[in-house]
Length: 161
Image 1 (cartoon, rainbow, N blue to C red):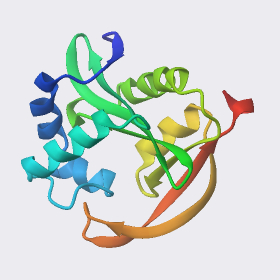
Image 2: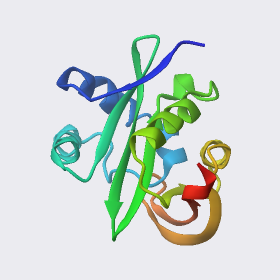
Image 3: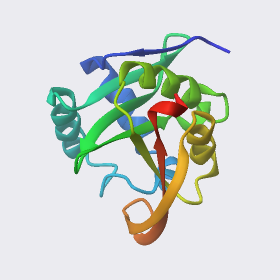
């Protein structure tokens, strides 16, 4: 497997990230996505806000030097959460798990939370392997499915890292 590296995002990465985040199957699986994944202006504005926010740790994920996704932590309603997106061509290769382990080293805040569509078995596995435990579920509107769906809420405490 190619070496997985996290690095700060660069303007040159945005085209690849935009393409990855508009793949229809990936959007459906992630579920909680942008309202219109094909809206480049909205994507660029979202990325500019995230990259400029001191409360967000955002990194590009590379494997073998190629941009294969992104990962971030952010604070919402006082809780630090993680999010990641892996190019579908690289699913099932352990990249998300390696990237998450690296992000957890960069972001020492605990507890830290993850939220995932309850039927997204791959993402649930990534979080569980990293030591996250399920603490509940919630229902919310998922743009990627144009419907209300269940999401699983997971937490990683200091004693689990």
